Image (cartoon, rainbow, N blue to C red; front, top):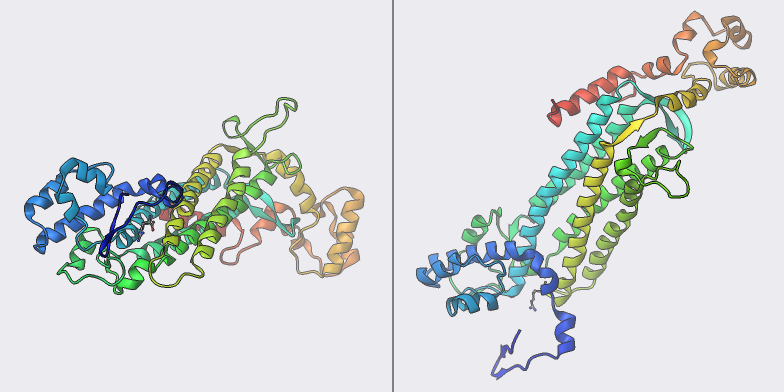
Length: 429
Ligand code: ARG
């Protein structure tokens, strides 16, 4: 970062305070692989176009340094390194590096999401017949199959994955060769570097190439949406693991105890999955705010997009991984769930009778401490003549669940269909 030639005079170095405040190497180093990739493609193209000699290119390419800061390269190979910056600016360079980095990160996240979906699917397959209360307003509403509930999250994650795929497609255009903002008069071949780096094609507009950060925002949004889904899963499982619900017990390997309350098993990982979603949302808001007032084209402000992106991505990867780990290490408490369903069985009769009649029947059940199915047909007929022998086929949670038969519903045939779809899609054997 020594003096830089500006017009006719040699600029003095900045003060130490300014240097410290504006530096980015402390976090840009994350981009080193992508930076080297970009430089190699660029050097190859420059030689192809006769802008540097083949000899210089070979020396540059051979030096696969792990810090492609030009200074380091200069120390290593001297003069040819300077020619690498022919027809290139840090503005198009950093935009290229960052797109390459995002592309790799998305590919990793997609694999992780699939692992989590698979973990949830296994949990569903291992508890296929388990009936749970389903809730609205956090009030017990209707009995549903556990796999039905778990596949809800699998569906959400599939849409999350789709968002990453679209984001990847849209960001996969190459800024390299846009230089500072206006392009260059040198006969470079932007299509050659774009292809070498696996981009669809060069970005059409050089000003757009160095000033666009919506790929960062889209990625951060994809992370945020995933984070919200995981946070809701976290919340649900924290509730389920509570003594009040008692639906699930996490194994010791994914929970913490308390030194003074030995009966406790705290689901910390899922609490933190919920908690860390805050950072991911914060990172999105940071970059939204960063971009809101920026004129074209490059502004140094853009340097502030890296740390939120790195933080958001590291966080979401951890969240997805830990949710999968947790899913592999929980068991469901059938007895406890049955007790709760007993109550639901006396409340949730999905029957064509009027609300009013059912309400009265439930009143009888509550006073007697029994389920609807324990009432006799005569008792029911007293309240309404619509009741016939077939009413018993509707009562009890098992019957009740299986009365649901519409597409996507909780009836066991419908859920089996959904399970089949995901087993096939996620290639579970
Ligand atoms: N660290 C800078 C960034 O991330 C690199 C680009 C610097 N360009 C410049 N004209 N000062 O944006």
